[in-house]
Image (cartoon, rainbow, N blue to C red; front, side, top):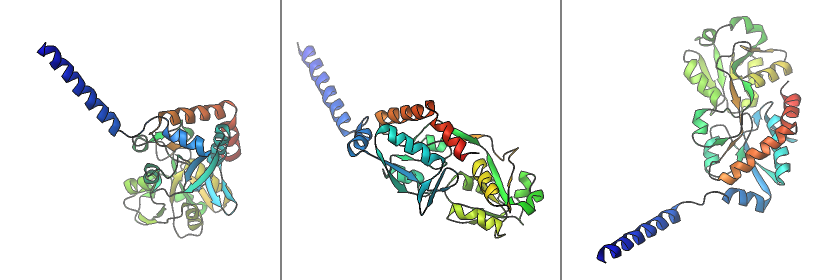
Length: 263
């Protein structure tokens, strides 16, 4: 009889301990999605400085990612609240719950996917160099970029900065906080090289006749893809976001956005 009582007592302790553990855990599936649906608001963070994916002007936001996330918000029946951020603060702001999803040309990589979720990849690209057209013959190899005479201007906080710091250690490297202003600095001769991705380089090379997109045929890095970044704290929200992305894709929304912005 004592053995039976002891078993019941041990089982009761186990149940109480489990209850305490679960009670101490933060709310899981459903909380973020519930908040979005109750407020009818999707908070979207973006640096807004990366053409042609997301750029902020006096007229508001525009670009490939802007079109896609607006279509997703409409499908979800919510409005968008834009939340400005920066590349250095992209992940810290996400973790601080300042927005529900981040867009604007965000590279998919292990470092990011290890801390958050990302939607399926789109717009395959490689790292390339934006240089002056008059200097294009100087920059034919990766080694030609890494010279003491070469002035590289980088934007802080993203994968382009990471590439520069890891690979262009001999070059003269300076930092400019506003990514969208760097191409003009290169065109004006205030720098020689901007490391960026395929689509941004193509955009500025087409828009500014003094600029040239180098290494398009043989990018400086293996091909990668971009993706929308969002928190991993709500399984229901993740499922709805992925389903909405698929719906937009199946209806031709991704193809239409690519046709408009990624030429």
